[in-house]
Length: 350
Image (cartoon, rainbow, N blue to C red; front, side, top):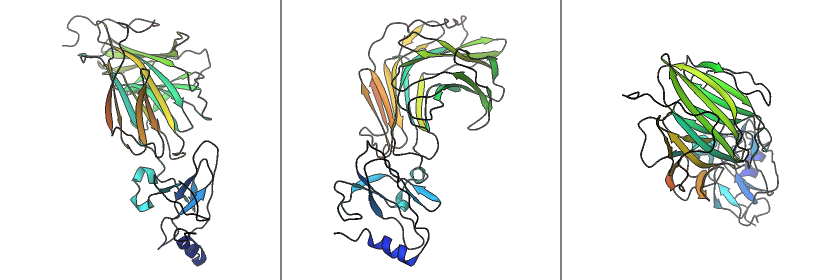
């Protein structure tokens, strides 16, 4: 039996230094692992213990640590924890991991030639794994359409349509087929208007997002539509108005971990076909550009024309921080739309 890993813990507990209360949570579906994280007073930093297969989190006193898993450590409570990874010392953890937070991943789609301006985008997305605290979007310059309200990992009940800008305001409310959610101005992470569509979205379902702008009387009206792709469904997620002439820029998207809970539970989104409209015609996107901020705990891959982002503790990227995937050739225009994008007037972009 290897006692080197447990001896310092025992000494600290015997000395009564700091907090010694620990909590363990387990559920099926994960490999047996060792997690190191006793931060008990001065002189005692990080130690390890074996936990059963499943979710894991040592809660020591007022702080909960879920550190990055890196190496193999085969000694724990009984001295034998085969093939169990061990965490880095708390003092060596990146600040966001020490706080229990995963950094975001991004996926943008583009055509062969970059349009001078983008007045409309169409993009398909698949929420693959969406535990509470996950947030995934189709994004563009100045806003996004995001899947929210996920409380149990099977899906959610809200589609957010957010536009930044202190003067952004609702021009038309969302469809009320599935109910009504109060809209409001948001002031966190900037200021803007938070539109809301009540919608029972589910993981594993392919959805389509369509956003376009029109310019009138010195203002821009952003319109967003959402629905199940296989059903050719379209529901208005709202229209938002703001001063000035604005364009969408690109067909983007991101996956993020909102909060500081459950880093060890993977969250994932797939991005499918995309088109952008330049005010004159549609352009099929032929490449997907992906990037992650923390390649030790985020990764990406392509399968059958869908590019996937995944966040999770220890989900290490094998392609670094960035990569570009070619996309399969698509039709000249996206599937049937609920309304056509407004064509730009001659010299409108000059």
